[in-house]
Image 1 (spheres, rainbow, N blue to C red):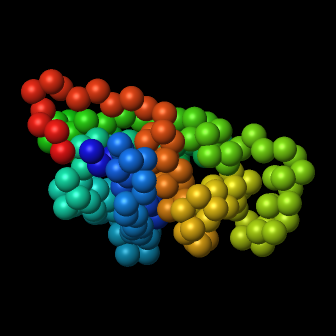
Image 2: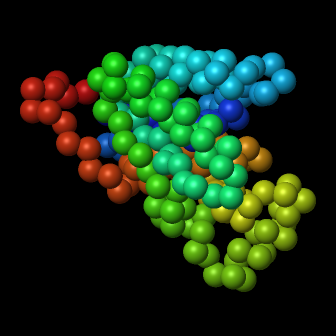
Length: 180
């Protein structure tokens, strides 16, 4: 069974895992910047990308990063709207889907909760990027775990979400479903 993990945003990413083997199969990114796409256009295009990835790769279940309120209310509203677009896609096509809280995959992939000394070392190595500590640590995790050398924290996060799901979430299949 193949699962899809999505870090959804204008500049987002996805990863596909073989659920049984717990192996990363494929990954990719997408970007619909505000200079060329309105927010509504970006949402439509993100929906198309995710639907295409699902169909082209025979994905059985989709996992998206849950959103959480931080300081920027406008960003939260936009992420909620995008999440609604994706949930609508999953519901109308009867795709199996669920949410993954950022703290769940971050703790599992050690993208948070490392010792202060370890975190500071990684932050000092990459602090010029201006990324949050959790983003730097997820980039480091995918480099070590999958040998993916990227500075794209959204791609790293999508891989971490998929890795977390493959190793921690039990997906029950309907009895009348055929085996892959």
